[in-house]
Structures are given as structure tokens and as C-alpha cells.
Image (cartoon, rainbow, N blue to C red; front, side):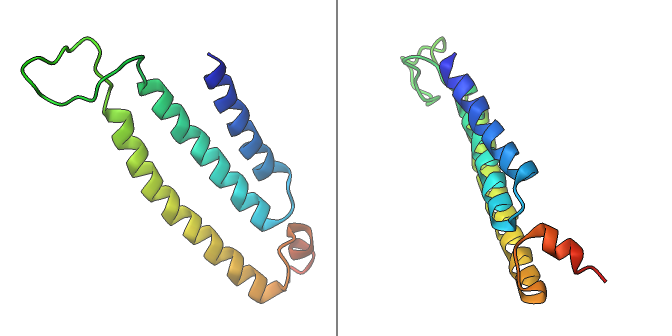
Length: 112
């Protein structure tokens, strides 16, 4: 149960960075932290004590198999998260080229 609470704390830290920070780079880091917290939660949901991988064999017990679906979802989420992070970094670079700062409050003042 403590691992789930730590996962929630990690997600809350990422959400705090997204909502309260003014620097675009810190916001991107918050998105990455929240994303990894969700991935960690999916892996924790699939975990079983002394679980085995779901490999077909004649003597395999079905009772203690690990669920492979969350693992596949996490692999897909990692690829999507990488693409999202690359897009966010590219947008941040373009904003820096145009405005010369990563601070959101200064970018809002320069609107025009």
C-alpha cells in the first residue's frame, strides 16, 4: 500500500510542477514526472508476489501469472511520452527563439 502512496506523491509532485511553476522547462519536467508516475502505477497494478511471466509451458500454473496487458500499455505509453516530450521541447525552443525567455509571465506581457 505504501508503494501506491509514493506513486500518488510522485504524481502530485508532477502536477504541482505543471500548475505552479512559471518556467517552461520546469513545466516540461513536471509533465515527465507525472507521466512516469502513471506508468509506475500501471506496473504496480500488474505486479503479483512471486509472479511468473505468462509463458506457455505444460507445467505452468495459471494462478500466479503476471498480467501482461499493463506492461504492453506502459511500453506504448513510453513511446507516446517520448514523442510528447520531444514536441514540448521543440515548442519551448521556438518560444525561446521568439521571446528570448522561458518565463511564462514575461511571455504574456510581450503578447501583441
